[in-house]
Image (cartoon, rainbow, N blue to C red; front, side, top):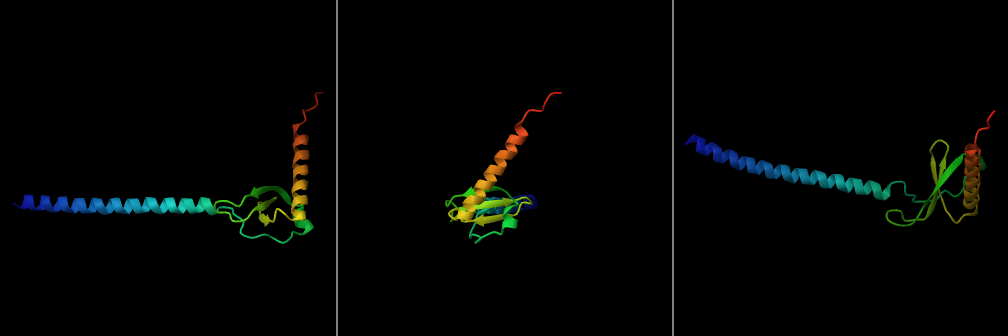
Length: 122
């Protein structure tokens, strides 16, 4: 008699626990998915531009990346990356930005040419 009662009680508790666990697990998975999508959408997006950079700051720019206005990024921009990893967002239509991009390209092409030479044989 007691066995039947406890067995029935255990089954109802087990089913209830399983349903709660499944609901909690799905909620956790959904939360992780939303967090991941939010990180991807807005990661490294420029939201506004710097008006200008001083010449002594510009000389530390080593590379740049073009941001298109699509997805989570709502403005087109040039992301300037400095030697130590600092990033500045600039308007791609500004003359100083275009000039700086050309300087970076020239510097990177010259660096590539220097490193691509074959060593002299002695």
